[in-house]
Length: 300
Image 1 (cartoon, rainbow, N blue to C red):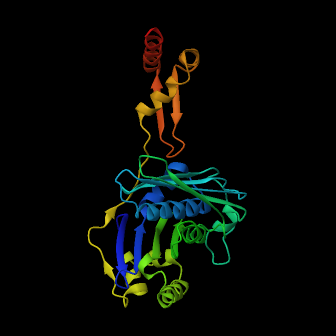
Image 2: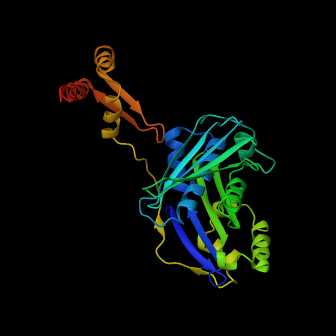
């Protein structure tokens, strides 16, 4: 099944639900960054969460960035998603290897660590971006993002996500966000029902790995609460905003002397994007063109 995002409402608009299938884009991140099982599980959850948070933004250029930083072996985990369905991400230490947890799954909480912070930045494309930071609750990503939504955005929320990996790669990945809308925020019975069903839901990733669709999972959780799944799912993909032109612009900032050294010593330059691991090559002629532009600007 193609990676996609679906939206739904339930309880006559009292509940907002968003689901994402992210198997292919998570596998793309694994391939690009050569991620270990626990690294791809942590990054996959974070990328799913960033896509789910971006889904509530209205502006077409809006983006959400999630940074998780703690004392765990993975170091910084970064994910950046847009309302256009694109996402990119990386971890500082992609080769971390840890024994599985008691359930036989990658031990994300141990790899991430408990002592640290989750930082969320929302950028609508103009004006000052909104940012908020909360302490990590468990380090397992899901509970940490749920806590952020409840504490920083004052929205009772539950976020579920999972990533399944075997020797062939990522076999299933995705996430689900359930939120009580403001008009139902004081309905304690509705909140109790939703909490009960979320707590009774088995591993979200396992359900995806067993072949359950997002629609089927939503039916299981909210089917008797006037569930309405909206048409036209959105396509999702791993895509970075880097480009060769941006690389040339960055090389220009090095200055004439360093560019000349690159021409003499390396006959060109190589740049690797931190966010997607794309490799860009600039040959001697292209570096010479940058030097000519620097000289022209200095005269002007």
